[in-house]
Image (cartoon, rainbow, N blue to C red; front, side, top):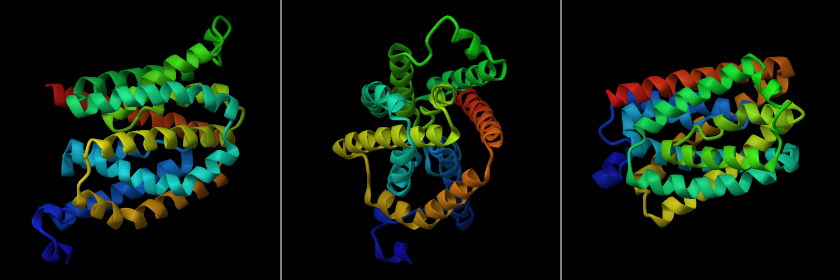
Length: 267
């Protein structure tokens, strides 16, 4: 056992029961199934569940390391299929937002942000369901650089503070801006990957990671690869209609989960 060899502060999953550790492993498989299928979305559900087991900051830092492993595997797919005309304008705003959000993550708790994120994502899904974005597109160019800049800046900041979920703000926008599910998935992979590398660099500079977190991530690698592989197979077998229906369900579940979590934390 690693806990018998390593000092207590470095032992992975120290003080957790076997059932709690199993819960973490199952959560990582399900989270990275989502990433494999949609190109984004693993971090937030993982953080929402494992925060109750590991603690909020610990959960956020471990999932960031885990995302590095998954993104190294998925990023080549994203580079090949991304819509680069859509991707490039998003990256500058997301980089700046990520820097701001990472600073905020080290300074404050994100309970109110979680609540606001849940309500906003829910509103975005409702707009999509009612086709209000199509009507708005008759007045505003939803593919313009200004719209992309505002969305990407807020997305980067929100995702960095909360440990995940920033790309959820862009999902419906990308559905409009990208011509196919494959280009949406690829663009999501590239933008999520860039965000992740920026946050990782900033947090390493802030000495946020510990040896135990690195070892925990290493133990989770099989679940990471199994989840992404299974999710990728789901994507390849799905039709565009099935893909977008599943995306809407994913967004609704995310909105409900983080809204409830924000309310519980606040009260």
